[in-house]
Each structure stands twice: as C-alpha cells, then as structure tokens.
Image (tube, rainbow, N blue to C red; front, side):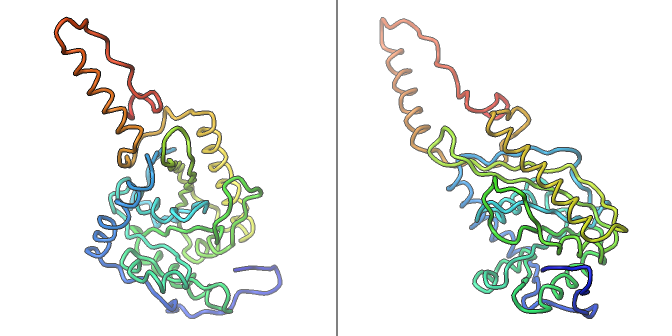
Length: 288
C-alpha cells in the first residue's frame, strides 16, 4: 500500500470484500485459544510480561484500532492474549493477515482474521474498505493491525509504517487508537521472555492529511517501542505483571529438587534449623 499526492487510491465499492473475509466463530476461537495459542505461549516463553499505560479502551469508546510493531512470528499470539485476558473479549476483534498465510491457516478466520494482498492492484483497498465498513457499523469492534507490514528487527530505525492504518481511520471517521509495543528477550532463564507494553489510547485528528496521521502513528509507536526497550534493558519492570507464566524449565525444576533435598536434610535428628534461601529476585515481588 503506497500513496502519493497526485494519484488517488483505486475506487472501491462500499460492499467490497477481500478474497478471504472473516468468519467469526466463538467456539472455533475458543478452541484455537485453548489448544493452540495458550499452550504454545506457555511452552515457548518463560513468562509473558504486561504493562498498561493509561486506561483500557471500553467498547462505548470504539471502534478501536490497535496498531503494533512487528518484531516476530509470535506477534499475533500476543494480540490473542491481550484480547482474551486483558479485554475479556468485550470487543468483536478483527485482524489483517497476509493472504498467503491465511490460505494455509484458514481457521484463523474464526478469530476475525481476513486477508490482505498488497501485490495485486486494488486488493489492499478492498480489504481496507471491508474493515472500514465493519468498524463503522458498531462501536464495540476492534481492528488489530501490524502497520509495518512485515517482520522487522526490533531496534531498526526509523520505524516505518504503511499508510493503510490511516486510510482505514479516515474511512471510519471516528476511531480510538491503542498502540502496542512488543519485545522478546533471552535474559536469565532457559527460554525467552515476551514483553508487552500497551497504551495509552489516543484519538487522532482525522481532518488532517493522511501523511500527517501516518507520521503521528509512526512517532507514537516509536516512542512506545523505545520505552519498552529501555525498561527491559534497564530491568525497570516494577510496573509489569505476569500475563502468562510458562512451564517450569530445568533451572526451576532443579531449584525445586535442591530445596526439597535441603529441607529433608534439615529434618534429620541433631541438624540445626537453617533459614530458607532467598526467593527468586529475577522478577518484582508482586510477580512471584
């Protein structure tokens, strides 16, 4: 999706539909979450951290466009966790997904996924018109979008976004934006940790030119991603909480074995009582 000042986007009818539209199914979505998304996150990550800046959007304030950076394969799963655990599915959620991938994983249409294809002229505009129409119809609808368009190394700057997110907002006419910053790091554990920093929500001046809306979104997302990077690197995680805790890895398993062995030794006749070793100081006290 590209735009210039001289060539308008292709004309698209109000009832345009992408090649693969969403096919929301509550039972199918719950099945995907319980059997695929949640087990995979618990297996892959030691912990998924969350920090929320500002209020969480309410359906009466919608429709909402959630724009996220795109540092890895797991980004859609992080959106799923936010939708299920933080938002409690109070919104009807939709997410743009590359057509080639959605043809392989078509069951994601049950979660509100619909296709976008940028390589064929007019196809992206059909997807934009489709989701814009859905957002206009109800305030309690939400779009999750990765406006970088592809996976990009987390610290590459400038952080560039496609104009589609602004084009959708202008077609809807009244939206609330919610930025989400994602990061994945190996720290002191066997498996990586995922970090999610969301908010604060903000409106946008939709009377402004499209390029100004894009620039504003790009600047806000850069601020959020940089803030997350700094908080993780400086281990300032006191405002973060555990969203999902992974399975016990070998270091925790071995620590439990050692703790049981020490308690058994201390119970032997004639052994002096020893104080318990300090707890895990890797996370804030509230997260243990």
